[in-house]
Image (tube, rainbow, N blue to C red):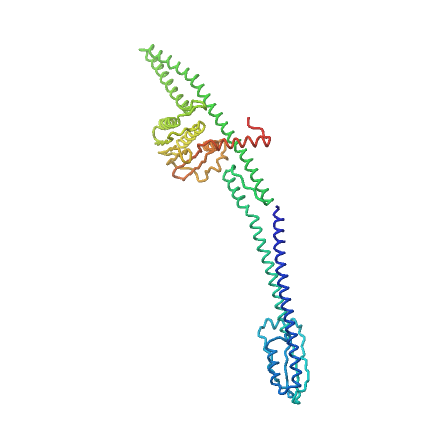
Length: 478
């Protein structure tokens, strides 16, 4: 149902109910007015009887008391009966004064400033005295009745308006209640959760918004799956290129340098006693040995021990990390103290995640050695069995980074300014991890990365991406 239709239907229902209430109130007021008119007619009949008895039954004290009683009961409604003798002396009690100033002012306004003249009726008494019956109009009672009726109508109108406002508020609140789930869904999308759909509702407009957001989440799921797949393939290409380069260096340069070293050793033996040639041969042996050592270090960086296997093999992550730390300390002349803590338990780390962990550590150590001016770096790799996550923490005590260096600006790094952190970020994103960087300027940098170990989420994303690709006729990545 449309929101406008729902609101109008509820307004019509509430309006009809209030009209029924107003009709009942009007009928009850009319019923009371009719009863008052009937009672007034009875009081007028009693007044006529009393006036007739004034001519017949002396003394008139009993009639005076009866007239005072009629005036006090208020049954005559709009006039007051007064009895005067021949000297003009009032024999009955005067009417009471109206103390309500607002009502008096309203009554004067309703009369329009007109002066009302009392009606005088001469009448002989039973004892022969001349009497004067005066009917004194009291329009304030009629105006009070009109004011009361107007106030009642105003109250009914106010009640109807208040009821409509309350009904509108309740209806809008109830109709827009699905907005809470929509806002929660938007928050989930902002946080990167695209798998939890937003529940649909019976309000057509909000249902269309929820469906649009669900389609957006599905499209983002597809794009993120493509992005992750692309990042994986880029990293696979990098690893393949490093593997190929390492093999070529090992097979070509390694063999050539080994041959040079063998020939130089032979020359060194043959030139014994010839100082100049012996020194030259010894220099060739030492230089070739140095080059071989540097080549082995380069090969260890390109494809260290444990990472030489294919995707079907589990790499020795802990051993590879320890070799990396040992090599970096040797290259840095042991001026940087590296402390490594690895706690993997019996968990089998996926190949891609293990390679990513190694490369992130490698890049982070390179940054520390080049820029941090640190004396100590702590590397912690551990598995949380309950959360099924792998965490990598690298903390140094160097000079830190500028506070403006944040993960949000890594994608804007220019090609000439270094891409170390960008590469780290891409590897973390490719493995659906979470990366945090605490610059803690100027007291070092803390880099933390947390990766999920369960592959079901990635499989789900890929399956959804394949389904969306088929349904949207989007060609998959080749």
